[in-house]
Amino acid sequence: MAIKILSTEITLDDADTVADARVVRLVNTAGSAVLVTVKSGSTTLGTTTLLVNEVFYLHKSATDTVQPSSPIKATKVSAPA
Image (cartoon, rainbow, N blue to C red; front, side, top):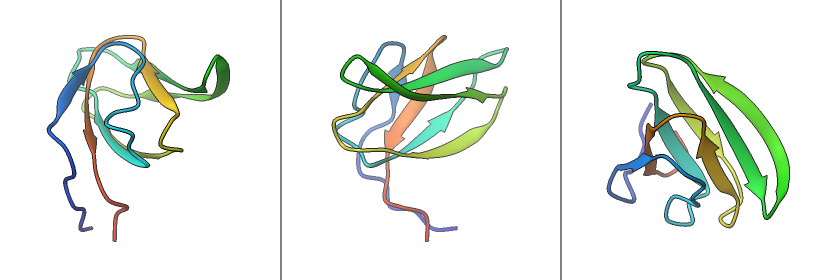
């Protein structure tokens, strides 16, 4: 799988658009599972659990925010090829 990195990796610990990303690479380096919530404004679009050491590619609208229950790593990337 090939991806293009489009931003610097950040520690995501609050709601953020991750540089207005449409695809976000999320990595859970914490010691336990993390609940990830995606919102459009104040409306929750969905949630998912990110397991320990799991890498997940999240597709979203540029203005949607991503909010983890505990800090995780996030990077704006291109869609996986």
